[in-house]
Length: 138
Image (cartoon, rainbow, N blue to C red; front, side, top):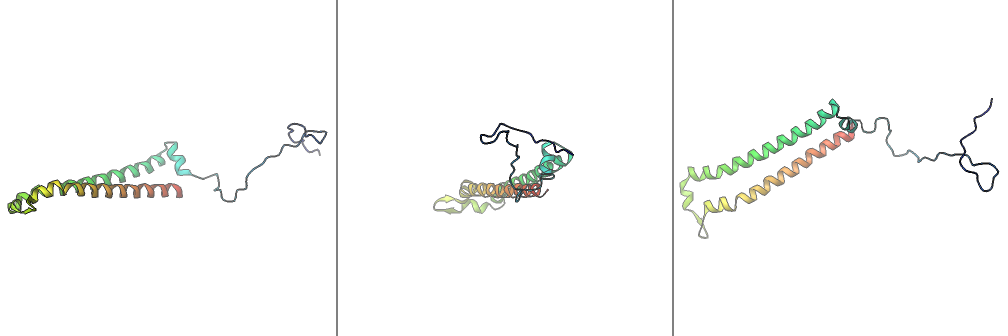
């Protein structure tokens, strides 16, 4: 039985014949197995039904969050004029010669907007982090 001759490259300077072709690879100590490395990302890249379910769930959770934060902001924002309409005596109260309704509408709205924006960004980042963890597990 004869052994097939390995593929040859170019001749080595110290030998008469060409050198033996050698395949050099890195040790696979910390790498994941390549057969199922990222099946969820592959499903998303191929636009399969499973990938669409994962992306759809992220979109729905982000939409739900946006509607909740926007709804809460609008309820509080419309609550200020309703409060002023229900209790007209608040209109006469002043703080350092500035009427309280002006303070509520002029200064109270901006911290409310910033708080709602910070809440939304933090919660949206948490949703995306959970989605990324779900992808990494799969």
